[in-house]
Image (cartoon, rainbow, N blue to C red; front, side, top):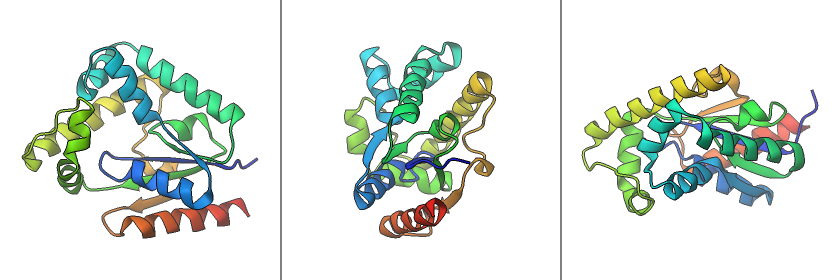
Length: 188
């Protein structure tokens, strides 16, 4: 297998994909790309919040098509990049594939604590973490159905990845270091 200098990072909401991928990119002096940011931007252009965009994406694939086209282009043309995305591992099979796992109760608490940023991105975050756990599970179920229907994949199946880390067990600096070290070993 021809290995590339591309790291794809997927995982559950709240698992630290964005912070981790930015940290890994900085440590390796790689560029960073977030398909979630692109998805949210496209949704906002259409006047949708993330939940509504996910629901719409189950019925029609135009937002996913735009995101996937960009990911495929990156996979063909770029190197020295860290990508925060649920499906980049699928489009870039020669990348180093990382999955960040996290219990949804912990995820809900983390997201609520950081909700100011999400609120400004037109994403409603309830203050009650138990209510939000249900909402997160609905989102995971929606995305699982969508990606299974579109591509026959489950981005939450940890068998798809080279490295799986439960981010509740480690501070972000250690998660970043574990990924960088495993990536360097994988590349060697």
